Every structure is written in C-alpha cells, then in structure tokens.
Amino acid sequence: MRIPALPRPRSLAGQLFAMQAVLLALVVAGYALFTFVSDRGQAESAARRQTTAVARSIADSPSVRSAIHTADPTSHLQPYALRVQRDTGVDFVTIMTPQGIRWTHPEPDEIGRPFLGNISRAQRGRSFTETYTGTLGPSVRAVTPVEENGRVIGLVSAGIKVEAISRRVQEQVTALFGVAGGILALGAVATYVINARLRRHTHGMNADELSRMHDYHQAALHAVREGLLMLDSHHRVALINDGGRELLGVGGAAGEAEPVGRPVTELGLPAPLTGALLAAEPRVDEVHLTDARVLVVNTSPVSGGQRRGTVVTLRDVTELQSLMGELDSERGFTQALRSQAHEAANRLHTVVSLIELGRAEEAVEFATAELELAQALTDQVVAAVGEPVLAALLLGKTAQANERGVELVVSEDSGLDDGLLPRSLSSRDLVTILGNLIDNAVDAAQGGARARVTVTVCAAGTELLLRVADSGPGVDPDHADLVFQRGFSTKPAEPAGTGGRGLGLALARQAVLRHQGTLTVTDAAEGGAAFEARLPLSGPAAGPRPRRTPGAAHAGSGGGSSSSSSSSDGTRTAGRSA
Image (tube, rainbow, N blue to C red):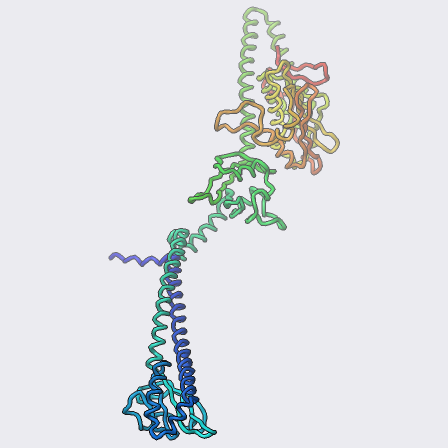
C-alpha cells in the first residue's frame, strides 16, 4: 500500500506572510474596537454637555420666568420649547412645575402628566445629568431648576435619546471601519510584495530547509581542504573557510584581525594576488605566490541582474610546483645524457675504427684523453663544492648549459664543505634557488658572442652565498624589483595556456625569503646581470653526509661529454670537448 506523502511545510516567506497578515488584522480590529468604545463614551459626554447647556439657557431665559407666572403657562412655553428643541437638535425639552408636572412635551398628550425621572436634586437647586428611560425611550437628559429670588419656581429638562447617540456613533464607526479596511488591504498588499521578494531570495524554502542548508553549508566549508573566499560587491571578505585562512595566512594567529568584513587590499597579500582578486573578469588557473606557498587561483563573479561579488577558490600547489621543477631538471638532464650518449657513440665508433685500421695505440690514447677530461671536470666541481646536492646540481647544469652552447664555470672563490649547511635548509630549497638562478642566467646568456655563466658558492661568514652572473644583456635598473614578481619576463611571450614564464625567479625569491635570506640583482663584470642570494647558516648543522667518490660523481656527470680547462680569469671552466 502506498503511503501518502506528508504535505510540505509552507515556505518561510509564506509563513511570514500569514503571520504578518494575522497580526495586521488583529491590530486594525483592536484599534477599531478601541475607537468604537472611545467614540461612544465621547458621544455620551458630548450629549450630556449639550443637554446641560440647552436646559440652563432655557432656565435663565426671562421669557420662561414670565410665562410661568401666567394663568396658562403651557400656551406660552409649548411653542417656545418646540422651537428650542428644533434649533438645538435635542430630542425633547420639558418645562415643568417644581413638583414635576409637565407644562411642555414633544407629545402634547403627555402635557399635565408627571415627569418620568429623578428631580429631587433639581428641586434643591442643583443641576445634574442622567441616563433614564422615559416616555420616548432611553435618553441622556439634564435637569436644571428655574430660580427666582432664590426660590425654585420650575424645572427644565432637555434630553437626547440613546438611539440617536448610537446612530451618530454608528456613522463614525462605519467610516472608521472603511478606513481600517483600506489600511488592512494596503498592508496586505505591501506584506505580499515584501514576502514575494523574500520568497525569491529564499527560493521558496521553509525554515527547516534553510536551517538544514546552513548546516550543510558550514560542514562543507570546514571539510573542503581547498581555500574558498567570497567577496561582496565592494571587494570586502564576506566569507572565508579554514583552508582559505591557512593558504592566505590571514586570521589564523592570536591577535590577528578577523578577515571577514575587511577589504581585500587590507589583508597584506602580494600585489599580483590582490590584483587578481580585485579583477572584474574571471581568472582561470592562475599561479600566484605568497611568502610561503604557490597557489592556483580561480575567480568567478556572482551575478543576479547586477554584480553581487566574487567567488574565489585557492589550491595549494607548492609541493607540485617543486616536483615540476625537479621534473624539468630531470628532463634537461635526460636530454643532456641523450646528447652525450650520441657523442659517446661517435667517439666509440672512432676508437673502433682506429683499432680496425691497426692503430691501437692512437685508439688507446684517444679514449684515455676523453676519460681524463671527464674525470677532471668532476674532480674540480667536487673539490670546489663538497656539498653533494650542490655538486650534483652543478654537474648536471654544466651539461645542460653545454648542450645549449653556454659555458658554465665555477669561480675560484667557490668553496663549501659537506655538513656546513643547517638542517633547516632542505636540499629541495637549494635546488629551487640555485637551479632557477642558473636556468635564468643560461637563458639570458644563450645566443651571445661569448655565452658564459659564472657560479659562486661559498660560506661568507655566517651566510651562504650563491652568486650567478651571466654575459647576457643585463637587467634594466627600473626592473630590479619586477624581475622577482611572478609573470614578469623579458623573453618572448609563450603560447596561450603554457603559463611558465616569469615563475623561476619568483620561486627562488620565495624560497630565499622563507629562510630569512635576501636575493638581489646587480650588474655583472661580464656585462650581464649578477643574482646574489644570501642565506643564514645559523641553526643546527645538517651533519656529515656521505661524500661521493670521484667515480660516482663522474657517472652522474654523464660520462665524457665535457672538458675542463683553466681560464685566464682564474675560474674553473667546464666546456665542451673538442
């Protein structure tokens, strides 16, 4: 048997509309009831004042006193009473003897009969009002004595029927309820319009659905590892999750200002990243650097008839970028080894050919010379730089530079013993800094008349000095700071989608700043640019590392692809063999 579905609760906007409509109706009805009671009381008070004034004016009239002393007071007073009754709007005017016998009445048959009502206080000379049911029905009446020389010579009563008072109040209440109905209708329309807008904003969801969505929203924000940042139309932070706080380094430590509600420009982010967050157009997979991270940034505007803000997602690719750098180095080494293998095959063919020609001694001499040249290069690099990571990097970069027609030399000033580097300075950061500086220098020097790159690695007091100079065109002094920003490059633009230009120096500076070092650029003696990184050597030393044997280093250099000679300026030179 199919179980019938439970009715869906009203939407939040519908519930608010019903509640507001009921409240508005109750307020209007309560006000109308209060006004009705108040108006009725005011009408009765007004009737008492009106009847009292009419009765006193009649009692003070000299013509009334004169008529009372005549033989037939009724003949004089009845016309006068009817005229006053008509002119003042009261329902009856009764003039009577001090004992209460009527001289006048709206109905002539009642003349000569006793007055129905209380007259005792008027007989004692006092005026009063009361509500009493007489011959004309319930009425509000006033009774006043007619006095002459301190003696009561007659009584006057003027009254307005309660029915007439109710009729007046009813007319006022009818108008009041008409106004109240108009107010209720206008309020209902205004409430409907407001709730229709609320319904659009809440998408017709009820309170339980909104509460459940909020709970899911909060759970998702804290569960997502990627950074999520939402900016309003004024580029203020409207929302940021835990991942975004960590990746941007904002609002995470005690004493730091809460980022929510602050403009993006006040978060202390790098200028290129701030510019990307402020941009009106979407950004797709842009790479940006902070002091400690490499981030992929995506921005998307939130629109709904007008620009409402921006949604920003952040992905941490710091480790991935380091691995990509290492992969690029490995690719370069592979290409160098492939070229060296080709050259080695050519030399092997030469040796074989010499043997086949019967010139064995010349073959041995040729092969021995190649081995000695390769071993000399390895020994010179290892002797200058005892740190195995840097030595291996220099050997590999030497082979790469040679393949691109650039002479890479290690200066005589170089000297770094194994175990001198602190443990806090990782091998990956060393490769990032020196490798990117050498790659940049080789790119700058390539194609020149004398393409040359000079590397200096040494301990200068309490600092590690890494200096890379090239013979390229140099750096414009106006660009001395720009060259370290991501995206800046003097090379030709890459095809769309590659996005690799201008990242190497930015990554190198990021690694240097992470270790509280400095990275500067000056003019080199060769005419190009000289990049100098200084890193503090304070902290626990890395400890002795197993030093490579010359044979092992030789194997890492790629065999006999390179030669070594001493240049005239005192540097160790690694060049191509003849």
